[in-house]
Length: 200
Image 1 (cartoon, rainbow, N blue to C red):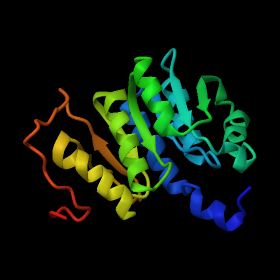
Image 2 (image 1 turned 90 degrees about the vertical axis):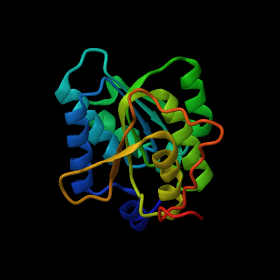
Image 3 (image 1 turned 90 degrees about the horizontal axis):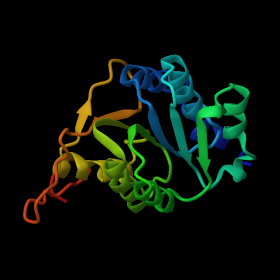
Image 4 (image 1 turned 45 degrees about the horizontal axis):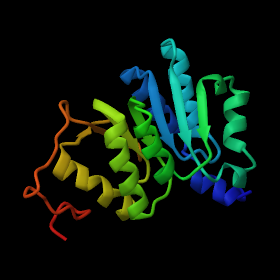
């Protein structure tokens, strides 16, 4: 299990958990997909929002292949908070789990992404979340200050109509509203997507 220094680096800070909870409360989702669990702080924030909203049949689908490396700390936090009853933990890589959820016709209202920060992994996660999150839904990401994460999401902003949604207080989270109806770029409409907003 990672040490205390890693816990501080990995765990979403309390103030950002509060922002995430409030974003979900405002969204009133019935189904949320979360990528990455670790110590469970963000999962508890989402779970608290779903509990407060009280929508019948609400689901919180969490994807994390490494929960065993954290001695199930994240899952235990959800259980201790009384929030695990509406949660499903998929202990596998998101690049494999998300396309299966697409095949199963799962439709989510919102997603939170805080898994791998390797560019191609983030990009593939967002490719599948674009299919899973309903048009007009919300995708929230942590660590967009990482060039790999920022560059991955920039593609969807520049080419598929995702729009940054303002968050009314300081946070390291970034939220993106998916277009409704979905934007499908044509073969010849590609826009380069450097992380600084310029052509690479």
